[in-house]
Image (tube, rainbow, N blue to C red):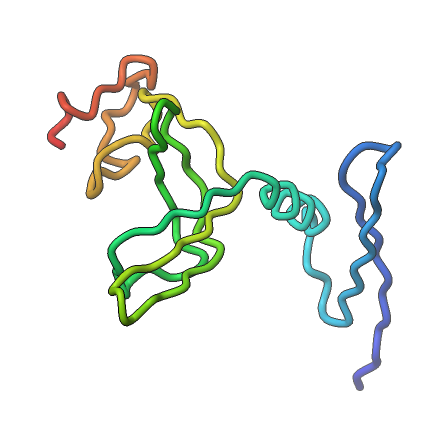
Length: 135
């Protein structure tokens, strides 16, 4: 014998005195603890963006990790929000989102191909130098 069980859950995230409120309704299985915090985190990441134009690379897709080094600024890490290709000029315009300053000693600043798991266990990231760790 089966029975339908309807369940209502409410989740909140952010300050108690918020300036803006977003109401999201999921008519699906319970999305799990942290759903509201995840939605808020993604929304807050939309505030800091850069638009970069460069040589077209057709492997770039929205949602991928982005590492951008603007002039006179620390490395910025975030995500690709959109890509627009100009086929005639063989260029692309990449819009990023969720950018944050990334210090040079962060593992996120490591060269391509070096994984978080490649850093020796017990090593402090303050001592981390990708040039000395088989990069």
